[in-house]
Length: 267
Image (cartoon, rainbow, N blue to C red; front, side):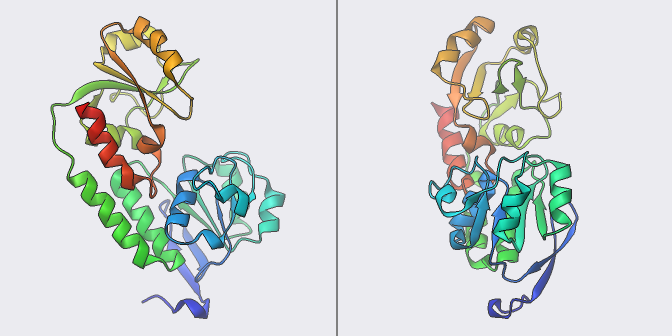
C-alpha cells in the first residue's frame, strides 16, 4: 500500500537496473534525462512537475519552454541540474552515461530504466506511474499498448535491415528495442545474429540480402536524398524511410507504434 500523496513520505523502489532508490512521495521536482520518458511524464499528467529536460526532449513541444534544458543525454550540465533542485531524476542505461549518472546519484534520487523488450517498456511505464503516484494513468496506458501489440496480425517475416547511422553504416541488431519491434511488426532482422549497433560494410549488406532496407529518421536524419545511395548498394531491396521515434521511443509514444508497424508491413 502506497502512502497518501499529501504525506510526502519517502518511497523505496527498485529501478530496472536493480538499484534501490529512495524517493520523496510523491516527487514534486522531476528531471528527465531521456526524451521518450519526458513525453511519458507529460502524458501521465506530470508536466507541471517536470523541472528539467534534455535538449533532445522534443515531445511535447512545450517541454523545453516550461522546464530548464540541462544539456544532452550524454553530457549533463550539473550546475543547471543543481538549480532545478530535483527530488527525482529519471534516466536510462543505454541513453545516458554511467559516470554522469553515478555523479548525480551521489546527490539525488536517480531512477534508471533498462529496456530491450516491449515487456521492459510496459514495466517501466507502470513503475514510473507507481513512483510518481500516477498508477491510475499508467496502468490503462500500459494495458492499451499491450493490447495494440497483441492485435498485430501475424505474417511471413520480411528479411530487413534497419539503419540508424551513415558514415560509418550502423544497424540495429540483437539485444535492442528496435530489434524487438522489428520482430513484432513482421520483419526478420538480417543482422539479428550480431549484437547491439554494429558497423557494417556495403559488402555485408549485399551478402545479407534484405528484401527491405529501413532507414530511420533518427538518430541519423535519413531522408529521401539517401534512397539512391542504398538502392545502388542493394539493387534488389526496397528502400524505405521509417519513423525512428515509433521504432525506438519506449514511453507513451508506443500507443501509436503498433498501428504504424501494421501499416508499414502491409503497404
